[in-house]
Image 1 (cartoon, rainbow, N blue to C red):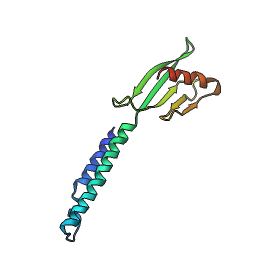
Image 2: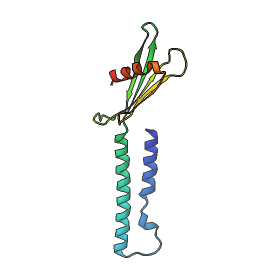
Image 3: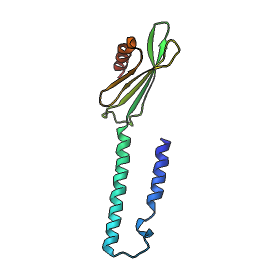
Image 4: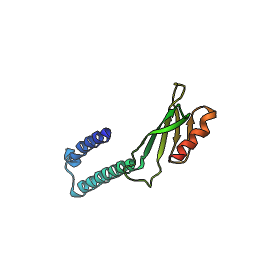
Length: 135
């Protein structure tokens, strides 16, 4: 979020300077109007692209901790940054704690419906069903 604010501040400072004032030679009225119109369409398209890009990135992160007593994973954290727009497809990243203390297992589900499961083959079906259950 801080990067977005920093980028927006730098963007506003750069484009707050009048582009036609930087030219040293004189223009006729039609040329100045055309260059101003050209700059406005570029900046308008850039701003619209930034806002639409922010709306399109909905990401959900889940963290599952392993319960040794019941021999199952339990959902500990469920973080979603959908900005209140639930009609967009979300990218889901689920992290499962490794019961043996090694590297954690990851399950990723992207907007297009493709699954990427980084775990041993014997656990893939279990982890995928666990993520589907909590969607």
